[in-house]
Length: 296
Ligand code: GDP
Ligand code: ZN
Image 1 (spheres, rainbow, N blue to C red):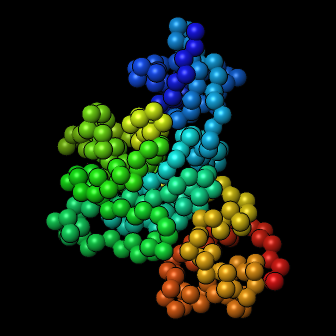
Image 2: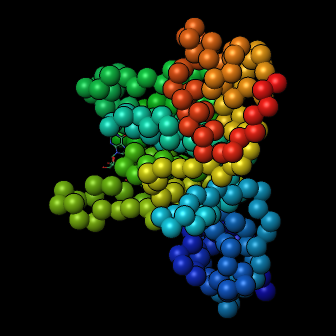
Image 3: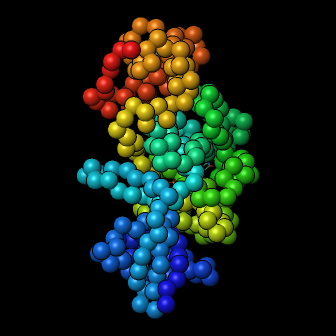
């Protein structure tokens, strides 16, 4: 007998899968079928608790670990929400880097700024976070609070249908958000005790089903993220705001560094494009060396 199951989480050589009944089953991976992560669909022999096969993935989100090994975090992702918090500061470059990775998965992208309760509009002391850098991108940028509940309906609506992974630094409130979005689930989150004991850190991605192919996915916090790309075309996908201006550059293959007649630099000078976006472009471009540059 075999069951078609969703992989909820992976722990070493074991995985938790969700059976068609909704029940969770712990199963073992064999060495020849080792590439299985959260979000995969697998067939499992429930009696022997062994994974028999894995369905083809639509996409996968991966990042490099401390040893520069590529690690798949989760598979079959429809939407990636980059979660940030206004304090200590919005990690803009991290957002820019994630956007390149997400647009190349491909998957839909969105930015969630959590802890809105800390800013003045939410009754707190911080000024409202400035998210104008992303206004020209056609992606949702949502200000929410897992604590006060503000913005959660909008987030739920924007995430309806499909699988939604929350990514971002640790401490921004990813687990708290999933908890607030799914009041039925009991996650262990953040400051459980004043003593600092029992602090929970997410070490592996976890699938919280909201429908047949719909879910919230919690993921381990990241300090940085480098998109796995090897061409300028892939980089362009992460910068539709730059690309729109670039159609007016004198050289079709302008890299917007020092070429004459660069419409992107001109747009920045005229205040039409945030300079931080051009800075992010240049930094990511420098990571792509050597970049062919014909000059027109
Ligand atoms: P994660 O590492 O991204 O999963 O973050 P956690 O969900 O563990 O939350 C980290 C800390 O931020 C905890 O102390 C939470 O109580 C706190 N936190 C989460 N959401 C909010 C929020 O909306 N407002 C405030 N003020 N604190 C929050
Ligand atoms: Zn240019």
